[in-house]
Image 1 (spheres, rainbow, N blue to C red):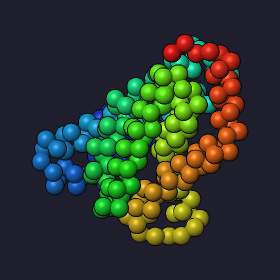
Image 2 (image 1 turned 45 degrees about the vertical axis):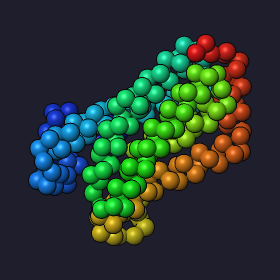
Image 3 (image 1 turned 90 degrees about the horizontal axis):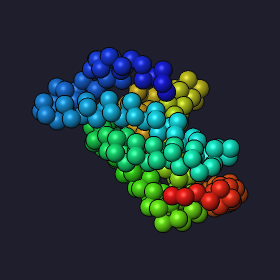
Image 4 (image 1 turned 180 degrees about the horizontal axis):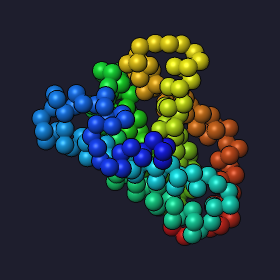
Length: 206
């Protein structure tokens, strides 16, 4: 994901993925296209932080007061302030028509909601509810990875289809299966109970 972000470091608006987003600049008023491109760069550069910080929340050795709390605060702040809102703005202008728009706007809204509920739960010291919503939140964070994996696998090993049809499909496949897996893990409770036990052992002082 870091390597995929490298082409955007120079803030060029006509590289990589942005080459197929030129219609935004052609069809939208300058104010709208400017908001979109700012949202794009914010989303690209901050979502990496969410991926890394979120990973630490499920790593047993890191489930202690200092590390777990510090990276958890980074994760929640990045999503609620930067990545989530910018992703929502981008979602309204997704390629592929209303199916893609619906997929990416739903993803962003749920991502913000789950993350916010994880935050309010831990502030209320409801660690069980906090863990459940963190599962859901990070499942959606990982959509940045799984979307690209699905796209690669389908295009190269399953079925060749028009690029825009593939984009509409992976817009949903990128996050819906992730969320179903998270719900299954929550239902089974094995991993959840392990996280809860570790959190209570360390008695986090939130």
